[in-house]
Amino acid sequence: MSYTSAPLLISAPGKVILFGEHAVVHGKVNACNHTCVRGSRLNYHAQSATFSMSLSVRGIKLQRLSSFSIQTAIAASLGLRSYLFLQARDDEIIQLTLPDVGLDKTWSASTLPGPLPYVPEDPKSKRINGDRCCSNISWTFGRNPFCGPTNSYLDGIHPLELPSTTKSTLETMINLPSGSQTAGEQAALAFLYLYLCLYRTTAPAGLTICVRSMVPVSAGLGSSASYSVCIATALLIHFGHISPSIVHDAAEGKHTETINTWAYKAEQVLHGNPSGIDNAVSTFGGAKLYVKGQGFTTLSGFSSLRFLLTNTKVPRSTKLLVAGVGDKKSSYPSIMDPILDAIQGVSDECKDVFQAHEQKLVDRKALLEKIQDLIDLNHWLLGAIGVSHPSLEKVREVTAQFGLRTKLTGAGGGGCAVTLIRDDVDPDTVAKAITILNSFGFDCFETSVGGPGIGVTSVGAGTSSLVTAEGMRWATREELEAVSGWRFF
Ligand SMILES: Nc1ncnc2c1ncn2[C@@H]1O[C@H](COP(=O)(O)OP(=O)(O)OP(=O)(O)O)[C@@H](O)[C@H]1O
Ligand SMILES: C[C@@](O)(CCO)CC(=O)[O-]
Image (cartoon, rainbow, N blue to C red):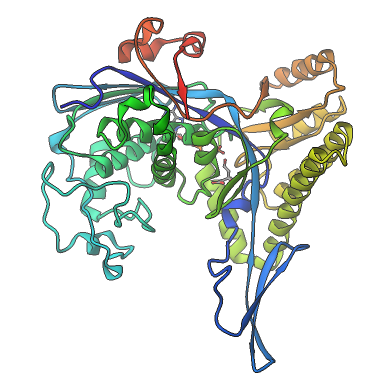
């Protein structure tokens, strides 16, 4: 039986990070926030946004145990989206077409390694070593227990820690030369990983998927997250973990958490060590304050801001940039930690000024002036941790000539910069800045933020050119953006 007899279109937005990128990856939330060792005391230092714990026995202070820093990022969904076409097949062919990253592959489901096995809730079996996890379970493709979203195998285990046999089979299937994966190969690996996790015999093994993205790839605008959210949603629906009735049924909105969890797994394949902010914003939409491991809260007011986004088109890899910052943090903690804490200071100031504005303690002009200052401060701090690039400094220089403030957004190292357009900036000024930025080969677009997250619609009249995967491959941006009938969660 097919859970998706009619083709579906799924879409998810990119994101723009205003403050806190990179720092958010390294934030730690105190797991024993409220339940500390008996006789211990937990203090929160608002100034430094750190927690420290001291242990007293009979009134004598013994020891400061640890310090935990919270790192908040502030981000919002973008108007640009990725779009996925999904159709179940009668045969066992898995067809994955990803025109934006030059990948067009088919596999026979019967050549895949078995689905990732269910591992019982035994802490000893929750080893990071995947081989150990599977050692005493025999399984064959199509006859395993269901590996559902609550599968303990997946909790706390990084997807790249797959059983070595599974991993090498997947790598052979995608023709992965070790160490040098192309964008398409990475995307295929993330897809096959989710396929193996979500596979269920009650749905057809075969499917056709084509993903198109209006989010520039590898530019800091969350293309990988919007791709991950789309493939997670498609496979959850295809294998019946989520009913395709979400196309019509508002009650199915509860599935966004599940989608977000699986999108994060795909992001881990693509990024190594993501904070989870990109997939959260792409899944849920809107404007968010996000703390790794804690989730997010809504930041009202952010969506009313206007931005100019400039894509320097300098290629870079989020995975490498995040790993580079991690290495520096390990080598020079006494230098890096204060910088990351200062970035938290920027996010705190941003949150406070929005709150003050909401309570009418600060007018809009003062709000925007403060945001401008914070943009400069955050960019300098990101420069200090080594993720700026001459192209990004050029964007700052050009926009500064017009009194505008700019910072890098996302992972940096090239990619995109975000410029705040204050209410008093006239369109002519923006147009002049864009002309100069274009002369350096940069792409610019004005955008609003904070729109909806994941959306699903069935393919039918009104989307005629997209009824096939082939149609999807060639659909224009206008055609994709004109698709109607979306149900957003
Ligand atoms: N439309 C797409 N089709 C297939 N794969 C995609 C698509 N968009 C992104 N990807 C995958 O995501 C990777 C890009 O991720 P990367 O994190 O470098 O950039 P980003 O997500 O655009 O930027 P950032 O993480 O800084 O916001 C690509 O190499 C590819 O594997
Ligand atoms: C650089 C980073 O902070 C943002 C990438 O869009 C990485 C992450 O949070 O996963």
